[in-house]
Length: 417
Image (cartoon, rainbow, N blue to C red; front, top):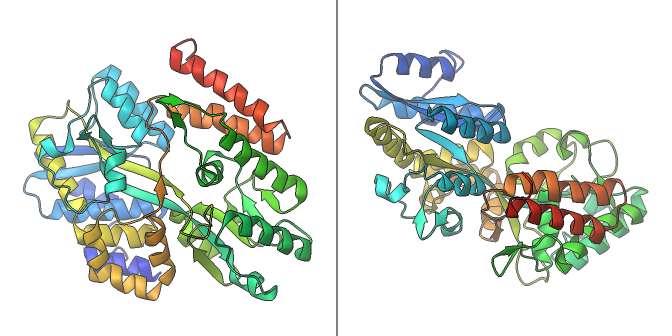
């Protein structure tokens, strides 16, 4: 509630007394001569509301121009509709895009370089920027970026005199001990590519070896075997219905590795003292690496010069310290610019919510998935399926990953689609 009030106060949009943000935007754009559409994949909740409020504030300062956000369903729906828009020749001015989406759109030569557009990128997180740099050129503005963190049950750890684990070895040992004491698995996870990535990266894995995609490396097999063994041995619980936070209270819970974008939802769902920590690493020397998720904002070449000018100004507005501070604290995403960390809005929020400072610290230990045009299909339909087969159907991890590797090679070579 405090975050919602903060957002309202900063943006000056008194939602309780005025029209909904989408209605305000509709009125703003009805009067504008130049309308730059922004297609996005926010389906609701804080992210959609925060984006719309940012747009309202930006449009207030425009004369005869506006940005109009247009929801397209989820992220996979969004990318599908963008591809259809290419075929129809009716693309928006801007859209959210993952790094692999950018790679795909570049194959069609559809994107404008961000700096050539005139957007200044000083102070933007270099890890985030490098992820959208293709051939030395930046093609996206990092926007809604989340990082994996360790959520934990302070009450349960205190009950058993356990410390927050600082290494993978400690993590597994603590999960085993607490599970035995509680009579049920205390590490909860979703059997998907995101969970897998945490273990994979921190066991030393890399998806690309000499420029080739490798899904069945020894590190990948080790990571998937660890998760499978966790279920077999009774210290890990696969959540297959809903999000982890929606299942809290259904059994003993101590840990989960999950996105920082779920922070507000965990707080709402936890009936215990919730803790947030940096991830256990391969050793105790530094935090473990967390998977970065979330999209970037791209600008399409087919946009008119007038729309491109609006897009340039909007992207610069989005990168401003105040906009970043407000958007991040309203959503649980990570500020993408250093300037936001000095903004009074961020500092006040971080002082009241120390866990958020932990999220920002974790963002300095980040890993990305491959920026391959085909990665979306590989991630969900091939690698994701292998993970589920091993966890849910008890398939041999190596056999499942070998199968995913073969299917990925066929896809990348053009044998299949």
